[in-house]
Image 1 (cartoon, rainbow, N blue to C red):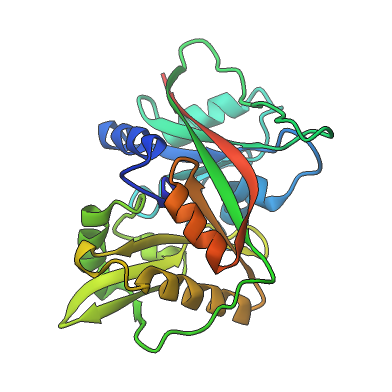
Image 2 (tube, rainbow, N blue to C red; image 1 turned 90 degrees about the vertical axis):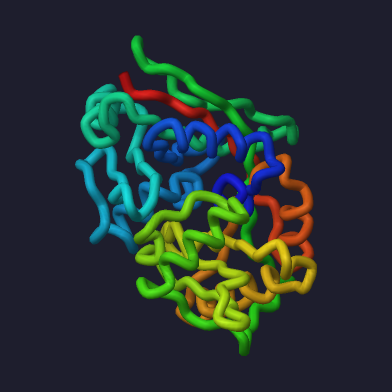
Length: 275
């Protein structure tokens, strides 16, 4: 998510913890089934992306799949109910590497929090950090539209995209992340000053991610314009838009809600190191 997945940023405690862990080792992020209620592809977004729209990029087996290291750090787990999943994780993720378990939290019948459903770690597996996030989904209030200044970004733009991400820390972005979907940006005087794009694609849903604006061009509505453009093209092909944010990044959440997104669920993130 930024500013942890899609809009999580340097001011968010969870984002800082996640970024620090990622810098220490090859951090990967796993989504896991919900606490209560029927399963939904959005609850296990990485798995459904890696077995669906991004199956051609997947590395792994029938229990665990991941993206190539230079594409994304996400890992998909089919189920935690099979004890063999831990052997698969060790093989697919690799000894000494870290991954993050994303656990959706749903309110129970009384409206109270349901608590965490994080799997119990086997002996030798180490919990390295924890953080809170949110998942946002589009509503009928969202009014997506194409942006006249936006240009599509690709392989030739990778250096500029990485530089913008490094300056703004919108979330993880790697040399071939652009392969996950459509990425767009705004250039002025040849300089890339804003960008956004598509990341996980579970079922009909597509995650808007890597929303970043150069500090010198903030408060001009560029991020909102690009989010609306990305959402427009998602809807044009029959899809629906979703986003993620660190729970502490209240400004980003408020901005996305103003655009027409709403909170679907809260999420816990737990970092784990493979022995």
